[in-house]
Image (cartoon, rainbow, N blue to C red; front, side):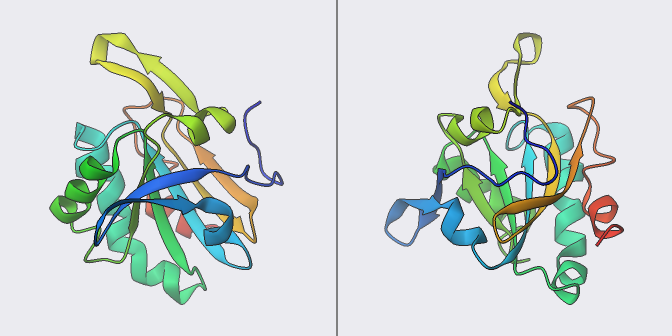
Length: 162
């Protein structure tokens, strides 16, 4: 089942780099009673993800905060070590974005956003999307038709609807 507007997010444990190494992050705890943007990319350091998608949320982070968004989370089917390095490399960490890995694609598959593109070397990856989640419920959802595009899922596109 693919998640849609109005659905509650499933319980999921994602991974991030903490001060002492990898640590689990319960998505339900991060979204309970809060307004959170979650956007996902096919892969850290891949061209569109690195040069367009993450930068669009770095640019708009302050504007989202002005509209009451408590946190912006980037999810990718990568390990927490890669997500930690990518957060530093893109300026996402400095902008206050939370970089979370879904290394086994558990969350991505649970919401029906998984895809595979063997010619590009992308196996069991996430579609490109952005969503607004309020108290664990999806209130806005933008999914790209083409994983190489970053238009409807860009920070500016989601921000314009809030």
